[in-house]
Length: 241
Image (cartoon, rainbow, N blue to C red; front, top):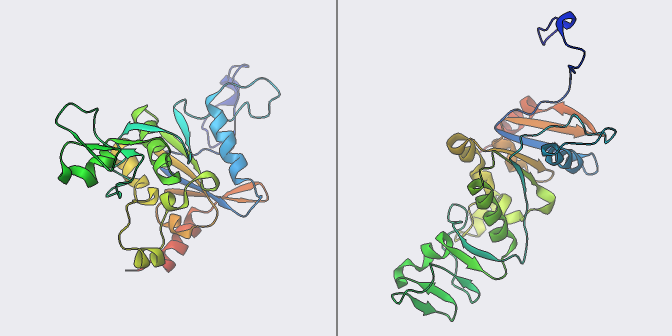
């Protein structure tokens, strides 16, 4: 009835489906442990592919340019601009910056190549290179690469993400003042507003995420319900300032 369709006029080959529709924007999937959050996200991720009959996920359909993003400790990175998430990094061996040496560049600490010494803090992350990335820098690079590849939706699971890249609570911010990482929590709304890139995030233990979503899906014993209104109420109760 809600579809406003006269079923008598529908072709025999047409299938009418009822179920979950996730709109664009920032969506949280929340719930207790072993209640199906990651399973649902994996089903959404496989929605970019066609399924064989009997697979069980035939009608799970996702935009074709959705990308799963996670931390990949130890991956190599070459020339990726992660300055939106990482800035003012300490200069360490194994991290380099800037384009290949052209005679005007110089070498610092045995591995960092820069145009000018005073560009060091910014240039390192604008042209980031490393042979062995950390969890946060690898996930930042994966997000940037997804944006550059034209993804319209990112699928992120807290379980396989770098904790410090996802969020920082107030106590940590008070203790650690000089932080190089701007967490994804503070970027997801801007990514949608400016680039129209949606984000679906599985969250199980960091309540700060309740401040940013457009919709919240609660999984309880594998049953999905809309918890957006309750999440906004909780966010308002625990917000400061």
